[in-house]
Length: 110
Length: 113
Image (cartoon, rainbow over all chains, first blue to last red; front, side):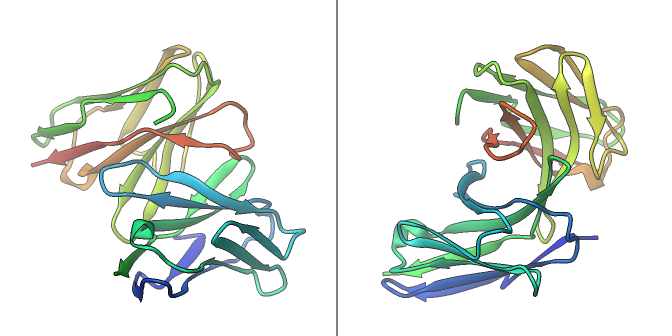
């Protein structure tokens, strides 16, 4: 049973557009919410992360929005570039163990 | 990939045979993890280690065992491989228990026929 539900499964966006990936969780004990980016043939790499006491975190073109009351968080990729084409995983941590979402494959068309 | 080497990178084996995957790190990190990645499931934790000879189960540990005799090496063993264990296996390391900086290896593609 997946503790973190991620959607959509895949998305296609034009270069310069905005990609939005959503995640939802039930367990309010989660206290750390990272996003990982994975390119084909590689392991996932930490992209950006947020704690539940913050509603938004921005790093370059990547922004996490966090809604604690709704138990939802999302990743926004602004000005999407072909190099952003990858699979993105949200995750949630409690007791120092990560639970991952199922992943979203993002394709950025030039 | 942050000083993590997984071997082999690819393996094909038959049902019922034992298989051992190796993770070697050069970062001297205390925590090491084994995950499996399957379509529709993301990454799921199999086992983890919080020090030499100290290991614990993750959420999908059935059919797997691990050993860590040295800080740098973490072995994952499938005692009797089954087709349901066909997957991509990732090793990850972390300097502390917080999971805030988890570094992954490049993975091992395992096919059990």
